[in-house]
Image (cartoon, rainbow, N blue to C red; front, side, top):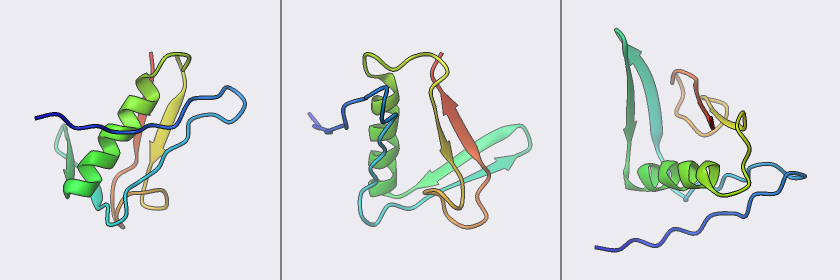
Length: 85
């Protein structure tokens, strides 16, 4: 199976542009020492798109994406930060 995902071109002036699919549901919780991510199909695809955006050429180490209940995650979710190294 082949899936095509479009990502926004990175620009040092504009930063990382994250676009989530309509209907995306993603929640995160810390259970013991484990970060649990739960998502529907749209949410998983949106997370994949976000990771590919962060992985593209030109994105410098230290650039990161914040996910929390005020920014893309469901209410009550634990904050998640993904950083490029």
